[in-house]
Length: 318
Image (cartoon, rainbow, N blue to C red; front, top):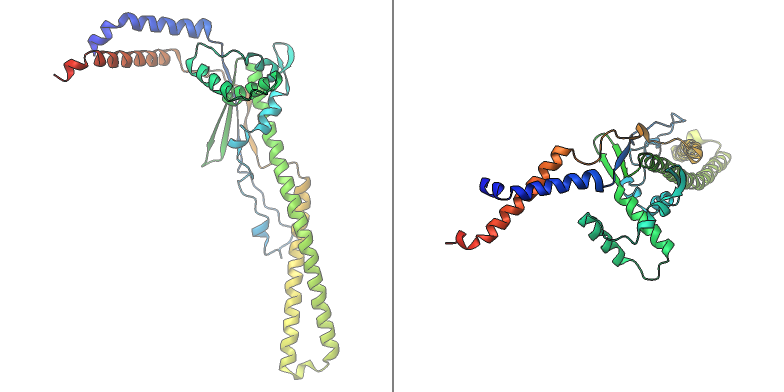
C-alpha cells in the first residue's frame, strides 16, 4: 500500500492542487441559513365541566394535519417562493430570473450536477416556453437547496437553505417558515370550519330529539295522573326522563364544542413554536479544509489501489 502511495504521489499532489484551485477560485461561495421550531405545543380548551366527550373532540395533538417534509418540497411553496421578489445585490428580482437564467447551462465542473441537469432537461416537455423552463429550473434549484430534518422524540424541525448569497439564503429560510405558519393556520381554520358545520347539524338534530322527548314526557304526564300507583308507568316515566337527561347533556356538550370550533375557525395562533429564528450560519456548509483533503486523498488512494489490482490481476491468480 505504501508503495502505491509513493508511486502515485505526484497524482495525489496534482489532485490536491486541483481541489485547492477549484474550492478557492472556481467554486462559487455557498452560505447556509437555518430555522428551527417545535410542533408539539398544545393547550386544553374546555368550556363546560359537563362535556364528557371533550376528550375525543377537543384534544390537540402534535400532528399539524400535514407533513412538513412534503410541504417544503411541494409545488405550492416552491412556486410561490421562486416568483417572490428578493433583494439580491441591491436590486429586486425573482428566483425565476436569478436562477432561471442559467437553465441552458448544462455543463459544469461538478459531474454529478451536470448529470442531474441533463436528466432534468431530457424529461422536460418540448412544448414548454422559455419562461416555463426558467420556472422549472428555478424550482428544482430551490428544491435541491433545501435541507430538512426532524427529531421525532422532541418534535424539533430544522430547515436549512443553501445559496450563494447570505441575505438571499436567510430571506428564503424566513419565507419558508412564514409559509409553514400560514399553511398550518389555513389547515386548522378549514378543519375548524368543517367541524363547526358538522356540530351545527348534529346540534340541530339533538335539539329536535330533546324537544320530542320533552313533549313525550308532557303528554305522558297529562294522560297519566296516578303514576305513583303503577310500577309500569313509573318505569316509562324514568325512561322518558333518562332520554331528556341524555339529550340535555349532549346538547350542552355540543354547544361547548361549537363555541370552540368557532374560535378555532378565526384563530390565527399556531401550535408551532419558534426556537431559532432564521439566521445565516457563521460556518461554511461544506466540510472543513483538512477533512476535504483527507477525503480527496482517500478517494485517489482507493482508485490507485483498484487500478494496480486490475493491472496486476494476472499475477494475483498465479
